Amino acid sequence: MTIAHKAAEIFVADGDTSATVERIAEAAGIATRTFYRHFPVKEDVVRPLFRHSSQLVIKALRDAPADGDLVEVLVVAWMSALEEQVVGPSERRFMAVVAASPQYRLRWMEVDDELSEAVAQFLAQRIGWSERPLERSLPAYLVVQATRHVFMQWITSETGQDIADLLREAFHMVLDGVRAPSG
Image 1 (cartoon, one colour):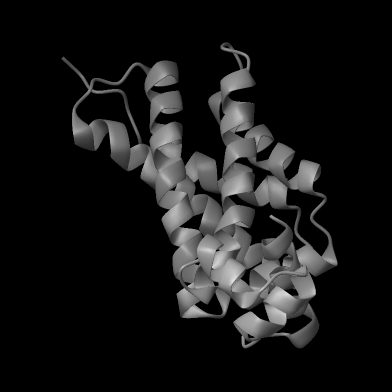
Image 2 (cartoon, helix red, strand yellow):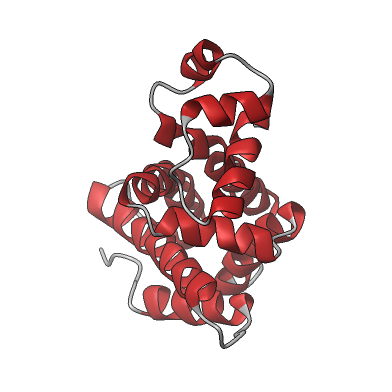
């Protein structure tokens, strides 16, 4: 995480992801070889940051009350991750820099794919879906993709719209179209 945080600081300061591995390693106080032991390619340096956020969301979903409104539980889960990490202007700039780079955005998407399985388990328990792969995975995938889309709008928008409201709107759009399978 130390290496990932140093890379994020450099990316924000530079306004792009062009910093060299050598520069990131020096800022983290490690050798370049050590960097490559942790991250096979430079772009992987952002994964720990996104994985940490995912773990916070998963924990919030696991700790959620069983009788709470599904959309509100999802909103609270993602908001708790944002609040614990104290997402301010610098973190928003980091997310914008990552989103602007296809190689780094791909790492964000890969971690989101991992998160989709945990969301699928949560939704299956809450809604009672069968184990049919499409019924189980598609709603979770849509929830996670909607979340990323909301974050993309939030980090690039100057309107200052509340992210919880954006998440709520997106989750309603996705889940209002999902029904428990019949028979």
